[in-house]
Structures are given as C-alpha cells and as structure tokens.
Length: 299
Image (cartoon, helix red, strand yellow):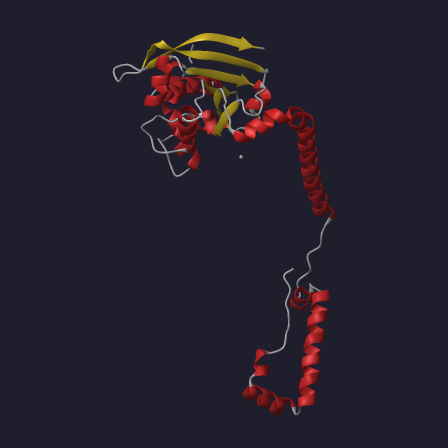
C-alpha cells in the first residue's frame, strides 16, 4: 500500500507645594482667594470630565464611538459561545468526573497512557472524538499535517513529545493519523522551492520524501488526487522517520513498542488503520523502506 476609557484627570498643579511657584501664582492671579477659586474650578472640571469620558473626542471634533447593534450582537455571540462551553464542562464534571472520581483521582497522581497519538492540528480531526480515547489513555501531540521529523533534524515539540512519551511514560503504541483534505499536505504539494520564510513551508518540508514519491507515482493524476495520495504516503514516511530514533527502534525491535498508521476520511467518514512490520522493513543507509501489515478499513 502506498502508503489554530482612558480618561484625563486634571489635578492640582504640583508647583503649589513650591513657595516660589506659589508666589508667582499670587502675582498672576492677584490673590490667594482667586487662586483657590481657580483650583476649585480645575477640580470641578476634572469631576465633570470623569462623568463625560467622550469630552476629549467632542473637543477634537471627532465623533464618540457608538456601540452598534452589530457590536452588541457579536458580544452576545461570544458570551453565548463561552456559556455553552461552560455547560459542556459542567456536564463533563457531573457525568464523567464525579461518576468516575476514583479514576480521575488516580490520574491526578500519575498517567499511564498506552498510546502516543500524532495527529493534525486541523479542527476537524480530533482523535479523542473519532477514536473514543478517554482521559489518561492517549498522550497526544498535534501539528500541521501530522508529521514526524527525522531524528537528525533540529529540536521540535513533536520530538520532545516522542522522547517523553516513549522514554518516560513507556507507551506501547505510536499511532500517526493522517486525514482527508489536509491543508498542510496541500501546501507541501504546492511548494516550488525547498523552503522559504513561511513557517508553514519550513515545517511541511519535513514531508518532502512523501512529496517526491507522490510526484513519481501519481504525476498523471489530478492535483487533488495527488494530495490524497500524499496524505497517506506522508504517514508512512513518518512511520519510517520514527525508526530513525535509536531508542524507538530498539523498543520496536524488542517487541515493547508497536508503530501504527491511520487515515481518517471525514468526507465519507471511514478510517484506515495499518501497522508497521519491523521485520519486513529496511532502515539501513543502503535501502530504506517499510512494510505494513494488519491493514483494515472501518466504515
């Protein structure tokens, strides 16, 4: 198989505490009584300004901002959105957390996930929703196009997740999930150069081998079909990249860790799953390639 009012305060002049400045004010205004009247007027103006925060705008000839019905409606939508989120959380607490209190108390002490899941950041692809993972079952990392960089490349959050989940949490399975209509793969297939200043292109170039393979075997297909082919091929390239990590290959070789690929087609709502066959795969410099087994389609 080919395989995201301010306000102005007018206060007493600090110079009033300075005797020289004080005498200068007397000379200007004529008397201490007059000075107190001026200060009283200043304080009155300050209080008035606080009651009329748009006074500065009025004086400048600019119109004061008006809260339109559209703005109110938008604010209301945001409030409704978080109110709905709050209700979801309270339902979770009541029907999940409180009814499985012992389980969640144990999770507060430690986690023992069986899976590391590497999935796309795409909002339509939520591994827990699609595959039913419950809290504590899957250590999950999501990135653009669900890519796994090779061991030799520089540091990344995905590599940190690999190190932590495999070496410290001792996960028994790694599952890389690709999906239909992936924007990251489309960006990879659309690239003209190796990379540019775009963060996206500098990341998706990790899948350049999948792109090259797709261009070789599917060059006569429509671009959309090329992207679909690459969505699956990039998963297999990521599985191969996983074997470039010495501590991952060692565990796979000993049978302590299994590596799996998955593909979620949200257009037709079906899921493909396969497992890397380590014995049939080649990882040496002379020849690199993987063999898969246990391929199945869930629909």
